[in-house]
Image 1 (cartoon, rainbow, N blue to C red):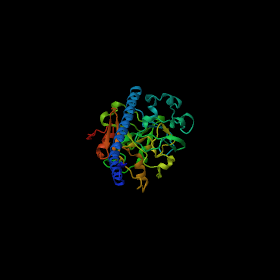
Image 2 (image 1 turned 135 degrees about the vertical axis):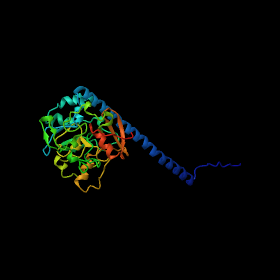
Image 3 (image 1 turned 180 degrees about the horizontal axis):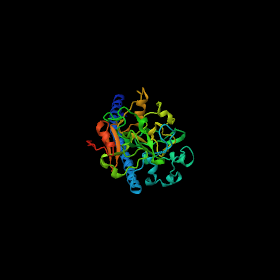
Image 4 (image 1 turned 60 degrees about the horizontal axis):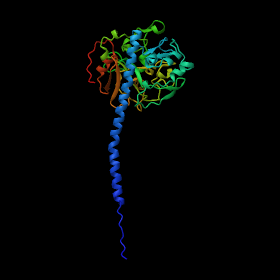
Length: 335
């Protein structure tokens, strides 16, 4: 009987290796595209958050006749200064009336106990960018599980701005320094007023009509992520551990630590001296600059409600102009 052997063809080892190599190359080509799409989605989500915040700002203004302060406090500089942030004032306009009611507005809230502590621990997704590298919570200034947020208010464009005639060599610890007059939340700066020229600063009562530079030319809120945990410069250290973070609702102590809720767009965007922090100046500048994980720039909410992405190369003069509400500057920025 004749026996016929059937030959079973298959991959040789070399062929298999070639196929694996081709698949690996294809995956390598696809991953950057997937990551790019993912980042584009996160950036759009961040812009959506900021637009919601913009609507809340406008609604607050319609209700109160003014924009909320970036920081509200009753004690002057170089003192332990409990403070309430812009993000607290917007709670009722972001469908968070229950949180607002549970921690009613008082001039010196104790953010480390009771319902005020609970408010500082509430996670509000609208205040967090999807691209942030921040952990959700930190232990900070006596507040366990304190929720980190991704947005800070614009207090000025002069502090840290090389084009400014006033504060080019300054850093974030100077953002609360001035001579003051008044009482309660009506305390107003009397000196170094260039540190307070933006729409949302200490105890500000900015009205839309005050923004004579134009609401479409004036930034209100910008992005920020936590560049560093340590070191802490000698000034900010007076506010306690965790004062470099950006936080929602309020803080037990904002002395020399204004970057917890506000900042200066005068610092170059994505300014980052982490790893090269040789003095307190660069520590404080890094903490108070506006920054993002979007790579080449930072999202900003403008006073008219629109959101634009400003590149890291935005000129010093333009950053200075965008922050002031009544500086009379001409802004030349390509969105």
